[in-house]
Structure formats: C-alpha cells, structure tokens
Image 1 (cartoon, rainbow, N blue to C red):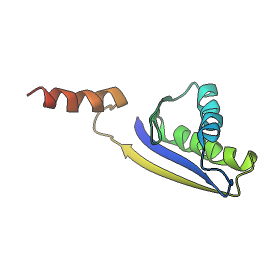
Image 2 (image 1 turned 120 degrees about the horizontal axis):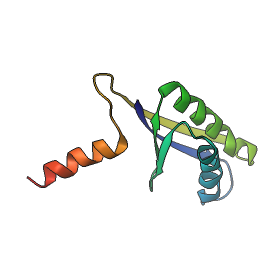
Image 3 (image 1 turned 90 degrees about the vertical axis):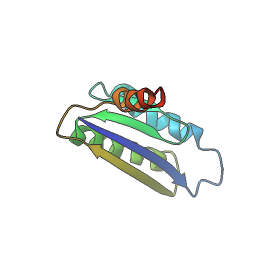
Length: 101
C-alpha cells in the first residue's frame, strides 16, 4: 500500500481563492471507493494501491481545467513501502508514540 500526498493548484484563474477547485477535486475522491484519503490544510493524503492512486490524481488534475483554469500545477510525493504494510494512521501513531517518551 502506498501513501501519497498531492497538491493540485490551479493557476491563471484571476482569483486567489481555490477552495472551490479543491472541493471539485475531492468529489473525485468521494466517488472512488478503492482508496482512503485525508484532506489537510496544504494538500491531500491518499492511501491505497499506487496504480489506482495515480489514476485518481490524474483525474483530479483535470478538474481545474474543466472549471476554467488555464494552468494547473500538481505536486505528488509518494511513500511506497514494500517491507511491511503502512497506513496514514500508523505513520502518525509512530510519531505520537515517540513524543510520549
């Protein structure tokens, strides 16, 4: 299972607010039952099969164009661990446990 952080930023919209673009991108995630995801203040974290995640991000990348953006910048950070199963919750819990020591 991969954990991927992505941020999709529309450019050339004439407006500094992008929350409606983010909401439109998240509709893709809401319709996708093969991944888990978490919206954060600076992006979205998605966990699941890497091929599925990359397909989902590709579809999300198109959303701002469909809504009138002239340019879209998408960043993707991939954590693909193959020695054991990882999750968003597990990664967070590992740090929380260490903070308690």
